[in-house]
Image (cartoon, rainbow, N blue to C red):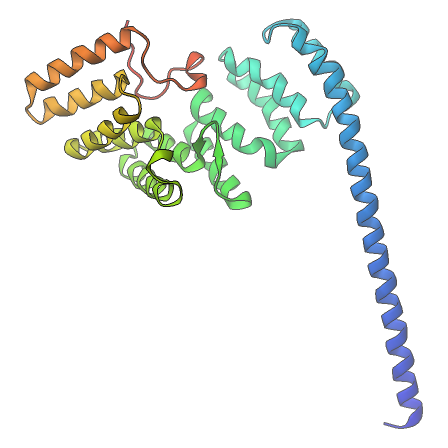
Length: 281
């Protein structure tokens, strides 16, 4: 390489280096501007939420026209506030108006997928009972953001519960089993939830694995000693195993507890009857 070529190469490297530095400076500046803009946008949206939801809609009942009127005013100012869409949807689900509510929760997911997609999948499982959509929603969310919890239970719990409701009992049992083992390994026995154990047991009961189901019902009853639904299904298992007298005695206890309201105690059980929940009246 002659001197002229070397000089040209040095100049070229210098120009590229300066260009790259300028580009990086530009990227950093854009990031700072974007971050500042996002901060300003969040503050503006928080003020809208405070005005039209906290100090507006929440002065009235969930089910009143004033609730929706106030939220609509907020959305008229900024239609991209996901929380307002979710708050507009929520009363409809509690009134069993699933299709209406779903239009609004879809908007919430559109504007903040990370915050609201798992909640929407929960709604599809427990409220709307569109189980295949619920499975799809939870699987997609897990793929995007990982394993976590919504409304006190893991995503895999709701996936397994959905399969249970689709009569895919083996698949449900497999997922319940893996989730059960995961929680034991990571958090220990004290972390276990009696509702998780109840439905895991149901997946075995449906396949005629009565002894294994009883073991899980007993674990649920260690946590919630008067859990009438677990007692009732355990009694059914005992009957299937020929233990008629023991089954009858346990069913009588279950009936008494059920009449006292000692049934599935999930927060949303006041709005929806949960899968396999027994009607005692």
